[in-house]
Length: 146
Image (cartoon, rainbow, N blue to C red; front, side, top):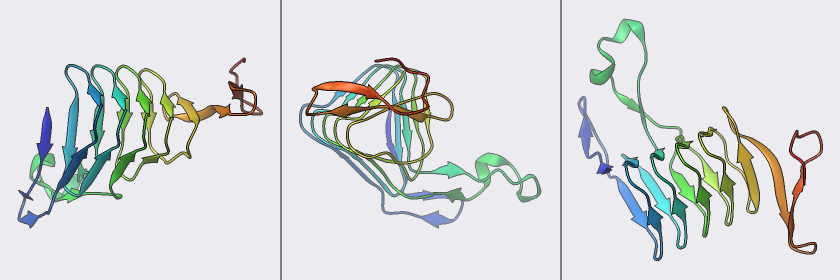
């Protein structure tokens, strides 16, 4: 599902959803924009991936969740040739640099620079790609092995 939201609960938006060339979007994905979602060229989004730049308010004293104003921590940008694994969620305000790898079922709540490998809930950096060695190298203190 690709969705842009122009209006909700009295608020209006100017959504932007840009998908570059040679992008693969698997089945059962949900990509939602009320502000800005940019998926740069060569990205791969496996099946059941969720990407959104917005969320409903979750305040118990402000009525039904679906009627609360939408909130956003900013747009989402997936850098060139980024891979997002099965069932992963990319949350509002996240920027991933080029050639990032997001593990299956991870929830990415913050931004990471190019050549980062992140996994978990919430996602954490476990490896970075070393162009000199031409391999993914474990980050100090991570449980990953190289």
